[in-house]
Image: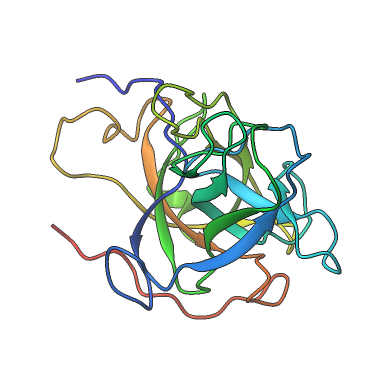
Length: 202
């Protein structure tokens, strides 16, 4: 079956911790940050001194982690709301966000319009933000553009191959799915090549 162009952001597959929290940590989103942040989006610090995070922009800046939800006091609903995504408004005060920044975390993510092959395992790769889904709260982020710049955000660990023939498992065509690990995140030095355990064969 052909791969489908249905990006879903970065979904954690393993890490130092255990499911479902994987040692998630808290961060803050400013109530006046009007850019939505979706479940599975890479996030960065607005400035490290403030502690506030924002949807990351593709580049070589150090990531704060991967966003996996938030809670806030809703102005419209008059109570605390737990949400898979930050809609960009409706908070009375700071938003408490949950992010994954475990340096050993690995994520399943869709590739872009060029196939990612076995020969690219171990290479560094950039991400694209895509378009998030406000109905589900899911990210539209994906990866594309391998390179050698030590500050690229992710490293390719393995290709998704199971179950054979499922969408995303064809490494000869675009939009195949891969497992990636952090390369440039706040909990790891830029360009660090810490040994990572490959995804187990299925």
